[in-house]
Each structure stands twice: as structure tokens, then as C-alpha cells.
Length: 271
Image (tube, rainbow, N blue to C red):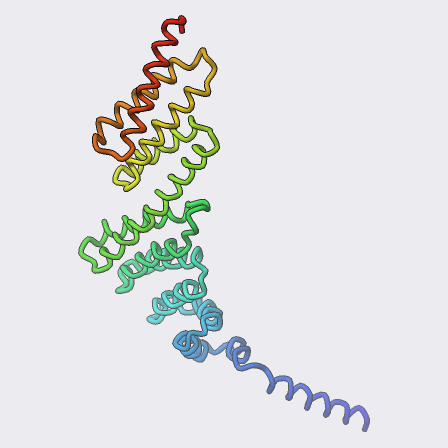
């Protein structure tokens, strides 16, 4: 009698546990693909991204080859984007484009690959691999879909990202300059001029190259001064040729005057 009563109580407890099971867990463990799909879409529409993602992930294999497979995969990719999982978002949009090359969502998926990397792009002070990749993907999109209404946005975002790379390049060169590492500063600034010839800071950068080389020559051991003053003089001549009305012109002329005096003095002393 006691054993029967114990079993009855246990059954009641188990029923209670099952009935208290959260709705999401009931759906997830139901094994009912139709129900899981309906609830996944409902969670997605309600912007409950985590729950939608979990359910869509369960459907990817079981829906392979079915009509709704494309929708499942596309929404699954978007759940990663909305949850700010941008690396995974880019991966799944790329996978979608390969899996469904003729999809009506193909163009959007290609754009979202680039946009995911744009969202992953960090502050300019940090490593910019994601920024460079986003620029490349936006350019690929513009080349692939030249008539797309998204091309204008791609071009705008490319400019924004390139400005970030340019700012990082300038700050790196300027940091070397402030530290007195004028050779490293010159290399960094010349790379900036090569990579961003349209920069609004070109005149300032070229002036800093002149001044940096002048300061390098002044601080060099005497055996290296003549060559370095001559290098500074060439940079100064180039600057004057390009910017005959520059606000930095007085400073450049002063450095040129002092540089010529130094060179002549070094020549007289056999250097």
C-alpha cells in the first residue's frame, strides 16, 4: 500500500514538472518541425532573436531541400546580425549566397556580408582588419550589382571607412613624429600619401615630413648630417613647388635657409 502511494505521488510530481516546463523548452523538445518553424517565425517577428536562432538552427538540416529552407537560413543569418554576432553574421550570409545562388535575397545577402564587417569595424586606434575587409566587400558588391540602389550606400560607407584608416595612419605617423623618431614618421607619412592621395591633410603631412627631416639632420652625428640635410632640402623644395601659398611657407623657407648654411659649412669642413 505504501509503495503504491509513493508511486502515485511520484507520478503527480512528474506531471507537475512537465507542466511547469517553459514554453520554449516544450517547443524545442517537441520534435514537431511544423510547430518549431511556426514558433521560430513568431519569435523572429517579436524580435526574440536568441529563441528564434535556436529554433531555426534546429530546422536547417531537416528543412534541407524543402521550400521553406531558404527562408529558414536567411532569417537564421539575420538573427546573428541582430544579436551583434557580426563575424558569424557575415559567415552565414556568405553561406546563404552560396547555398541559394538564385535566391531573390541573394543581393541582400551579399550586401549584408559587407555590412556585417562594417559593424565589426572598431575604433580607429585598434587593429583595422575588419575595416579593410568591409571596404573590399562593399567594393565587390558595387562591382557585382552596379545598378543596385544599395551602391550609393556602399560608396558612402567606403568613404567613411577609408577616413578611419586615414586617421589611424596619420595618428601613427604623428606619434612617431612627437616621439622624435623622424625616420619612422617619414615612412608612415609617405605611406599615408601613397594610400590616401586625396587626404585633406596632405599639405600638413608634407610639412611634417620637411620638419621631421630637418630635425633629424640637426640631431644626427656629424658624419650623417650632410646627407640628411640634403634630404631635408629636397623635401622642402618639393613642398614649395606644391604649395606656393601655404601657411607653412615661412617656416619652410627658414628651414631651407638654415639647411643651406649647414650644408655649406659641412662641405668646408670636409663632410
